[in-house]
Image (cartoon, rainbow, N blue to C red; front, side):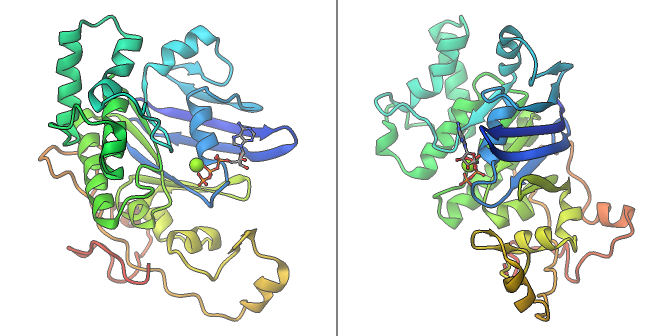
Length: 317
Ligand SMILES: Nc1ncnc2c1ncn2[C@@H]1O[C@H](COP(=O)(O)OP(=O)(O)OP(=O)(O)O)[C@@H](O)[C@H]1O
Ligand SMILES: [Mg+2]
């Protein structure tokens, strides 16, 4: 079914360094969310805080009635069973073959027999298209296969929430396209709540139901995909359309001189909103909405050319 994650006024710093403050958002059950933000804005820290690996300074994270930010270690241990996580660095054991890597959480956290484990591992390897590679070591396969192995391992405990930290980093565009399709298909199939951190704008534009943007130590915006893709808000517009003109500079924020210099520059138009990627496995996604539904309901005219078929890539991005 997937479960909801309700984050309220969450603040995190390391020593005197504030990472982000007052982050409030609700990640709806079963939906796909993407979290964006310039490098170093604390996206990975956000994911680690959600699973209780890092403690926030204040605020709450409510999952199934438990506050991750203040619960006991024991409650945290139970809640963590709801999560499947694909860490940014893949975190595969280099000396273990793929089968053993994927079986690891089952051997570690359950009392299942080896034959039960085998059935689950093979099912998940099948799901991510890795049948036949059981005996390979992580170093012997491509980056894309390692990512898929990481996803399979994140799924073995049948998570209700799956966190992906840059699943597409280091992948070529074709592998990224396959991975995105896999993520959408998995969401349809296992119906869990997905949160994906990515730098890939095409992924952000086509995969999720909702998008969030962390910028300058706060959550600049969070909401339905169509809301952000039609937004005039300068930071959102610049980031989601990968443009140079806007408040974000090379080292996070532009200074007053830089901003003044581009004050009379015309902004490029907001590109059309692409269709959302649909499952290819014939299973409908519960949270998939009709193209343009959010814009219609909110009286927003989408940019010209939006929601046209076969528009897999947006020009100008
Ligand atoms: N355990 C830690 N102790 C102290 N500082 C940390 C710790 N983990 C992260 N940070 C700091 O928090 C900030 C945010 O780091 P984080 O890894 O979350 O960024 P990010 O948005 O994921 O970046 P990227 O897009 O490059 O992955 C950085 O300045 C980092 O140095
Ligand atoms: Mg990161």
